[in-house]
Length: 51
Image 1: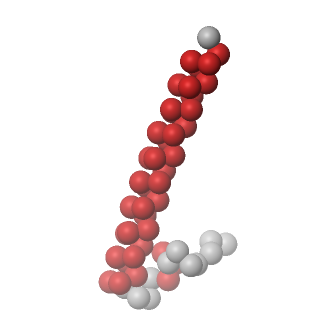
Image 2: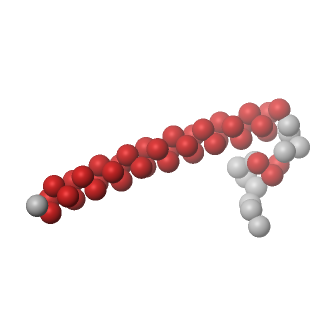
């Protein structure tokens, strides 16, 4: 039954997206806190580029 397998896979993908969005929100919140506490901590700023 390929339809059922496809649906289950889509549910897994949706669940992973939710988890990634939650993690990204947490990371953004932590960065915001760090930037407020230490304005010189530009390495953690979302605007900075790695490299």
